[in-house]
Image (cartoon, rainbow, N blue to C red):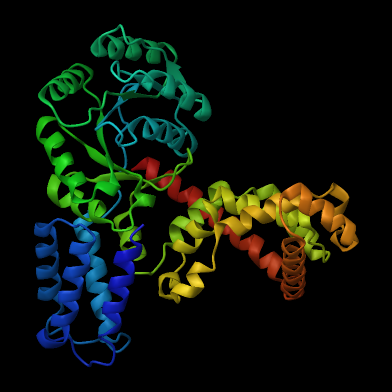
Length: 459
C-alpha cells in the first residue's frame, strides 16, 4: 500500500537537505511535488488543497532546530498533517451496551463486506475476547448466506441461519433474540450490497438501523476505488448514521487516495483497514502509523504487536535453547518460514521496517515471496532425518528431493547454502549472549502489549 506515494514523497523530501531555513522559495518546489504526488494517488482535490495550505503555513519561516535539518523538519510537518487529515488517533469500536452489542455492516456489492464481517469477528474474538455471532440479512445475492456460514466456521463465530425467503428486518430481529440466548457479546449483521447506490437499498438499510439501533454502523469500502470510495462513503453517511469506515483491499491499493480522503470528506473515522486476503488480515487503523508508512519511516509498533500475537512463544523458547547448544537444523528453518508466513510474509514485514522504501528498486525486487514458499516446499520434501541432519543430503538425495518438490538441484544447493550461512550467524549470535537478550526483549514486549491491551479496554 502507498508504494507510489511513498516513492514520490521520499524523493521530494530529499531535495530540502542542506538548507539552513525553510522559506517560501525553497519549499515551493517541494510543495508542488507533494501536491502532484497526492493528486496522482487519487486524493480528493479539496483534501489536497487543505493539506498543502496547512503544510505551507507551518513550514514557511520555521527555524531549523539544532538536531534537525530542514528536510527532517519538513517531514515532521508533513507527517503531522497526514495524521491530522486521517483522524489523529485510532477510534476503537464502542461495544459498551447490554449484550449483544450490535454492529451493522453496510457497503456496495463487491467491496468485501461479507469477508470483512468474518475478519472483524475474528479480531474481536482474539483481541477483545468477545463471543461473536454473525448473521446475513442479504436476501438478494444467492451465495451471500452460504459464504458467511463458511467464513463463520473458519473463525469459530456463532452463525445464525437465515433464508432468502425472509425479510431482512425479520432476520435481524430473530438474530438479536438468538444471539441473546447464546450469550453472545457482539452480533454482526451483514446487509445486502448493490452494484450502485439506489433509493430502495438505502431505505432498507435505514429501516434496519432504525429498528436495531446498533452501537456501530460501519461502511465497508473498496480502497482501490480511490476518491470514489470517499464520495460513496459520504452518500451513505448522508443517508445513515455511520460511526466509522472500514477500508477493505487496502493491500492492493498502491496509491492510498481513499485512506487520505475518507475522514475529511465524510467526517467519520477509518476504524479498520484490510491488508490482505487472509482471514486475520484486518488491522485497527492508526493514522500516525499509516503516516509513518507513507513517509518510509516504517511501522515498528504494528510489527511488534503482530509478532506478539502470532509468534509461537513455546517454539521461540525451544529454538533459543537449541541455538544455545549451537544447533539450528532445517526443521527450525522451516518453523521460521511458517512464523514469517503467519505474519503476512516477508514483504509485509519489510513494509513495516523504517527505510525500506528508500532501498534501490533493484534491491527491493530481489525480495521475492515465492522463494520463501519454494524453500518451505523443498524442506517438506525431505525426510525428518534429513531435516535434522542436512549434511547427509548427498547427490542422490538431492535428486529425490528435487523431484518431490518440483525444483532443480540448483534450488536445493541454494537452500542448503543459505541454511549454512544462517547457522554460522546464529552461532556468532549465541556467543555474544544474544539469545538471552532476545528472549528478555520478547517477554518485555509481550508484557508491554498486555498492559496496553488492558489500558485500551479500560478506556
